[in-house]
Amino acid sequence: CDEAEAYIVAMAQAIAELRRQGAVVFVSSGNDGSTTALGAPACISTAITVGAVYDGNVGAFDGGVCWDSETRADQVCCFSDSSDALDMLGPGAWITSSAMGLTAWESWGTSFASPHAAGVAALLHQLDPALDADQLEALMVDTGVPVTDPRTGLEFPRVDVLAAVRTYPEACADGQDNNADGDADCADSLCAGEDGSAGQLCEPDGEVSCFDGQDNDGDGRSDCDDADCRS
Image 1 (cartoon, rainbow, N blue to C red):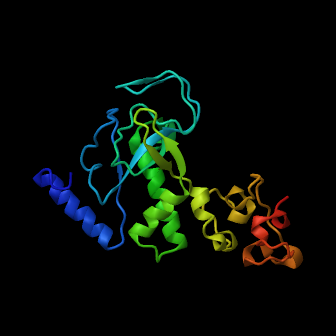
Image 2: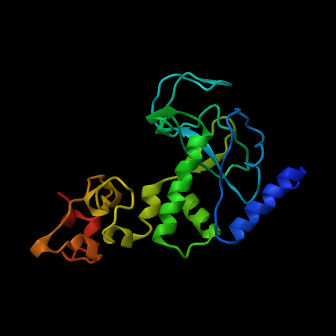
Image 3: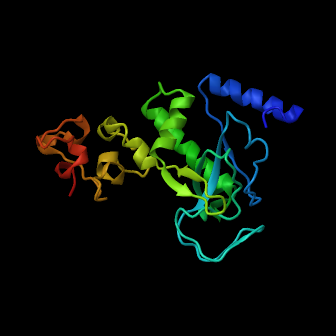
């Protein structure tokens, strides 16, 4: 739709220029329940358009324009606009977020899904500032969880921050709190093993060996990826 109308042309040119300079624009797909088309700016080719999935079983859900009698994690929300121009999916119901004048607010919509994707992109850019927009999008798509929209049969990647970050093993060893949960990554699930067990700080002789990126126990894996640094 980049050249559909004058105002869309202007937005498309701006988004394309931002992308050319390395910035990525994430756009919510919309909440009209459409399965055939996306409105502007979601339909702009150089934007990354994000639809919504449920974050878990939230029971029956009234999406205003639609109704889901049952819900589960990674089920495409009935209200989420979709077409073959959609790029990816993110959690969109129910989402707890901050709000003006309140400590927390729970709501839903593709406007909550898109910031999840933008957050993954920000984290990846922090890990690898050299990533250009195309590389960043490709990494998010490649590490996403495949989800099929039963309304159309189309498959889209649901963003997966853990899988994306694990493509950078050095992130486990940088001593930072990349997932912002209050613990250094090696002490939490960001750098846990495939069994899901959380990491544990390893401090032999006062040194944090988890953070050196080495295989100190000689098992063929960096310590942060195995039991050497987990309880």
